[in-house]
Image (cartoon, rainbow, N blue to C red; front, side, top):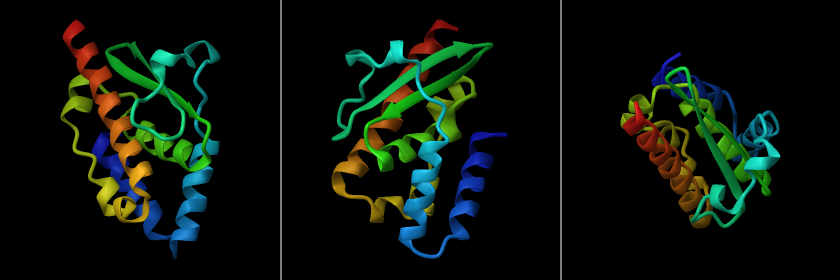
Length: 139
């Protein structure tokens, strides 16, 4: 599945949810389903800068693709990182670097997140693209 197909799937999932209470519940559920980062990667250097909550993100390069794992100490934030991982993980570095994550606007996340959570989401996406860029230069 391409990055855009996964984004379209997420947009479709959110279209069936009524109000933002249901959407937050879905985001929390996605966070609960997030494959956890190995404890050895929950280090200071894997913490995302710019997030009010603690978010650890690890990137692994395998078979030409980047795979992300993460964890957070906040349930909404964990759901947010889960969505971004669902969209970007398992793709070639160049695809990740060039991706346009339009699902954030399409599902209305920017309007319904606090400024700190919104900034944190931007920081997560930026860090994932930086990891991909670094891995792209090695290929």
